[in-house]
Length: 369
Image 1 (cartoon, rainbow, N blue to C red):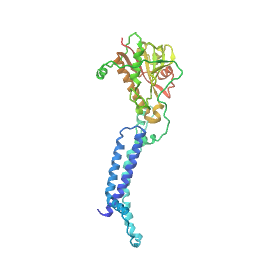
Image 2: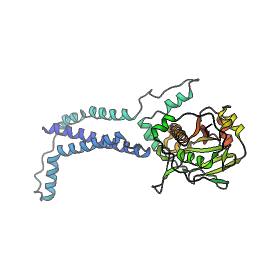
Image 3: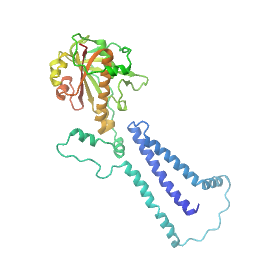
Image 4: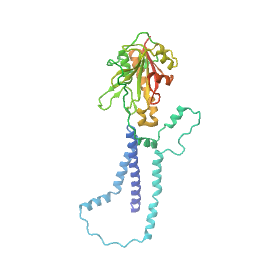
């Protein structure tokens, strides 16, 4: 290999290696900040950096061996000084080096274009557009956006909500559900809108809450994991129970304190009519034993996931809702989810502001008729 070709390859390898080191750092930073488990681009960038480093060593092997020998063997006296090279002789060398600039910008441009959005790629909207679609489009991720948002420093809110000083109802320890296969439970799952007149037992409510949102894994002393999956294990969904007819709990509005597996009483009294009106007069509420209210605490995910936090919060409400459906079916009681309700009325009923915390899902629960 000629000396000129070797020098050009050496420069190209150095440029490529620097780019891959930068890509490995950025992808690792984003993956760690956003909990992107097994982030493929980070793995690929690391492998590419390793291969480029090995190629760099192979290309400079003779120089490396020579340098090691010079360290180990005393060097001979320096040769006589050469005559200085005329300035004009450097012209062709500089021109050849300048030829390396196009490949550099080509490689750099390819990497940057993958991580940065192209001009005009951000969507535009007009008045009257569907707000759900607006949010869907504006919360689409780009690597540049992920990197910039991962640099935000915000304190993490507490993982548990509690109402200290309020009366509480200790729930019975949950027991194993009836021995029924998952497949059978899924096949038998239905939305039940007709309920029997008997009170729901407190142990039934305990099981329902535990298998919907309770703590199921305490092996990590610093983090307790729960029945439903959660992005970053942040658990932004809180559960409230508007109790009408539950044996062992007087009628009222309760908050499920997941850390202690207990019900905290926020209000005492019968609020069936208020719940019925807030749920757009859906008749099942008039016969249910209770209505579960799933609320989203925006700050609990927003500090980490920024504009995608609302997506993750709704996904988690769906996970928990399905848990409640399957648990109720396995226990032989009825449940029916409700997405139609007056947000402000529900928020007022359970005592949340509707901004930092707001209702996202309702579920009527009762014994089978």
